[in-house]
Image (tube, rainbow over the protein chains, first blue to last red):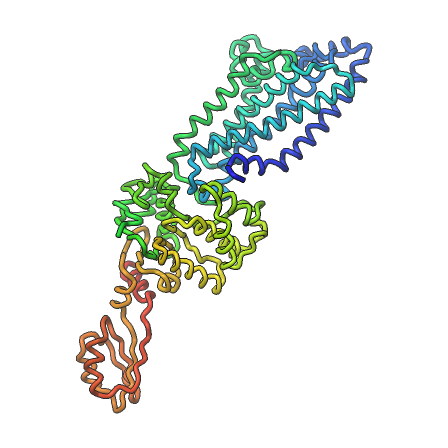
Length: 264
Length: 296
């Protein structure tokens, strides 16, 4: 392992295999439901029986198509939650986890700088998420072919990219908080709290008129609005990596200057 | 001769607790410096300041001529560092871990790594997570020595090592000095420091109480000498010699407590016919303990 980045990816290999298998199974199970739901004669009526808030929240109006079904069933909650959990966990572990384990000491007394370490871990996090994204993409393509959902390859690609970027943003927040505080629980807590807050803002914006103008601040709105399958490559996607890098950049000076804690 | 480590009023305070009082220290090149003190005296704090892992609250320190704050990266490149509680990635084998560190430091020297591992009787194929504390410590020693750094900064290096490995480690330290490297090692084990160090610094509750050459300390130390005479011992004469602190005569043998040089004593005693001399080498423990006693 020639660099911290390669080692960080090597460390993720088991987790990535596990998460990839789980993700694939989940996608195949969900898409396997499509033939029975898509053929329901009274689907429209059935959906109308749901409260309006729920229909809005889960894009149920679109339920009649394979794309709408996957948007509602997978991308409105399950997939983002899985990606965020992975990203926040990894981000918190990358520096704060090493510090708590005591392995950061020797690592920093090499030509690896604090800034270099942060950047390499940021890159490793993105690489890991891209691998998970590729698995998600392949699983949905497979499910779509097997069960006739008719999902377009390009729209699905943009939705996958949006999911990866969304997770990367919060993963970078956890990484940055870990680098600043050296504490993994704090990094996980802040990352998760920010994700929940972002999600609530997105949901509230859908349901409450007054919040609507603020909704676009939510990374979930940036990633998920209008699909995400079928929304195309929105300019709002660029905000997510920009903010992600901003978090990392903000952590650099503090990480470079603070005391490294002894293992505990 | 250059200086391997120098500090100017270097100090460290955690929140409100002073861990290290302002310290001026010079460690010359090519010496083994033993940094002694009881647990909690501030040894680890000092070493982590040298390693660039802590920021000084006051003053500054230079390692290999590089400031540990402003030129941290260059300073860190000079040193082989063994942390006090060494831990490594449990899932990696020792070989994979050392190879990884080697790459980070600009390319592993596999032959040197293997030879160090052989000397410490370390099996490189074992996962670090499956190792005992002592075996893990060997991995820590190998990683500190393997890139042949100009300065070794070792925090309690022999903790957990069995006596045979300890001896081999001390040989490694001596070799490093012979090759012109400097070794700064902390310890609360006097015998270990005495066996290998040229200079010692004694740290008491965050204060550097003493820095001295080991030989000089030993010369100042109180030692016990037993002189067996052919006849009865010249008791009164022995008492008159300034270096002699105490005399106890048992039969033909005088048990003496002597401070400093013994030349005058031996010159004065030899005309009386000495049959046998037994000297008990002084150890640093007396010096060490006297420092704590006076400061309690």
